[in-house]
Amino acid sequence: MKVRALKNYRAQVEDRIRAECLELSRTLEEAEAARARLEADEERQAQAFLTQSASGIRPDEAAMHVAGIDALSSVIARAKEREAGLRAAVEQKRAELIEASRERKKLEVLEERREREARSAEGRKTQQRLDEIAARRLLTDKGAV
Image 1 (cartoon, rainbow, N blue to C red):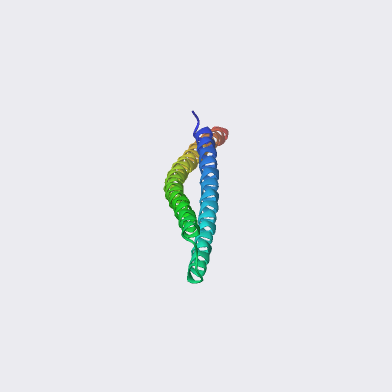
Image 2: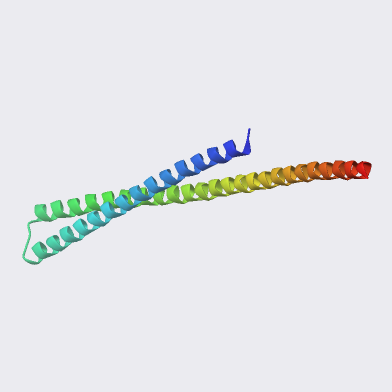
């Protein structure tokens, strides 16, 4: 397979990984925002419970508030777990992106080296042809004298 084709393939892989990394990062940001909203809601519910408790609250109402806050705490805990998983996935994708970038760069360097070698070989051939032409002229000029 040609180096250029490999380089193009690696660039496509790198672009795909970059897009996946970006999507994961967006999902993580959304998850963090959702968790922050849940925590704010939990804080509001806790404050409402404290306010109602200070002014007197029936036991069944207190139990409902506590159950609601506990349920919200469970949802927040799951949201934090999801965030941790997303963070790990983002870091993994970033590592893949770095590796893909390195591979593409290696192929670029290899392609540049091969192009330089081809130009150098072409330059040597051109110089060799010019030397042959000059040698023929010299022989022709000497034969004419």
